[in-house]
Image (cartoon, rainbow, N blue to C red):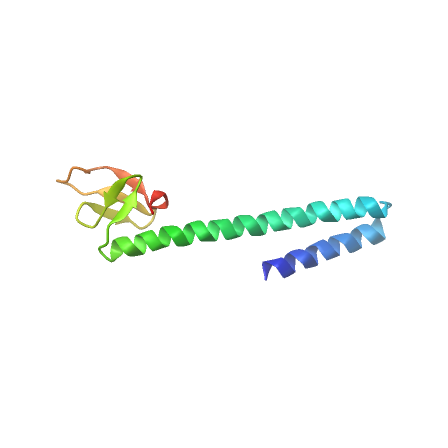
Length: 109
């Protein structure tokens, strides 16, 4: 849906350039290409962000299912860590070797 909205916006921009400016056809195409590039960059960034979020949520789901996840070479599990849902951070439990250690869920596999 974002692609369609982006194309419509670029189309309106091209129409505005056509009727309200003294730019040549070549200059209009360049401006439209730049605007289209910006829209496609935003869509690509959005897709990347969604992928990263899904990866992090899968790690949290595995942790909540009592499975061990690997974070920066450290095994993280329910017996030694708790999870802070607000920040998606694993925090070492008291009376464990990892007490006070904080690991972001985004760094896990």
